[in-house]
Structure formats: structure tokens, C-alpha cells
Image: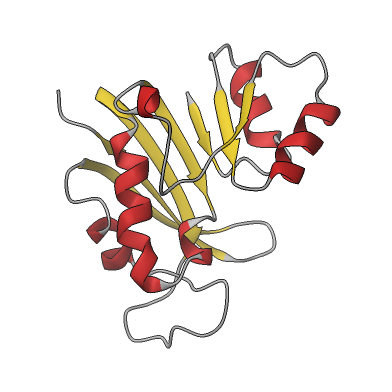
Amino acid sequence: ALVVACGLGDDAEELAAQGLEVSAFDIAPSAVAWAQRRFTASSVDYRVADLFALPEEWRGAFDFVFEANTLQSLPLDLRPDAAAGIAGTLAPGGVAVVIARGRDEDEPLGGLPWPLTRSELTGLFPTLEHMSLEDYRDTLPIRRLRLTARRPD
């Protein structure tokens, strides 16, 4: 599994606790160092990496990719390349789960983090088979979209 923009490592550690072999990255060296300090006995391979220039060995290497709240924090013009980077890490048959704040098509974009519409989120992943798109409110309550998509074999 790969965790995109892992921050302080909670998502990566949860996936590892479920028995997955996990790599996780963040562009911020301080976040990666903090995650490594928090989880000193971790099996997670934490790395500093840039979503727009990922290590070549990650191309098509992962059966599962998890991304939450990264796309919504990027300017609109950077989102397609970021999504392509995420999709590009999936192995054939691999599944990605992408979570972002949501808004209706007729709702204004507003400020950062910039929520996505359902069509914006699915449109960012044209090469993947969209398995489900959930629209829900979390405990805060903030509207979220959760796309589950699969790379064709």
C-alpha cells in the first residue's frame, strides 16, 4: 500500500496494523521525521517525496493507494497532474481510495481547502474504473467525497 501525503503517519500506521506492507510519503521532511519519531517501531517505509516527481520504482507498484485531503489543497491547475501521479502508482488491478471535501456543482469554490464536486473528482481519474463515489458528512460535520477506483488489468 502507498499513503500519499502521509502527514504525521496515522493513516499509514492504520493500514500497517491491518497487515499491509506500507510505504508512505510527504513532501515535508518535518512531517516524515515527526511520523518516524511518533512510530519508532513502525514497519512503514516513510519517505520524503514529491507527488509531482515520484520515485520511478513506485510506478505501477502498489495494489492499494490511499489519499485524503491532498487534492483539495492544491490549486485547480495542479490537480490533474497530482491525480495522474496517484493513478500512476497503481499496479494493474490496484485500487485507490481518494477522499476530499465536497461541494455541489452550483456551489461557489470558496476558499482553501477548495472542495471538489463529484464530477471534478471523478474527472481527475479518467484512466481508472470508478467503483464507487460516496458523498457523506463526517463527524465534524464536513461534507466529504470518497472515490474508490481501480486500475484496469
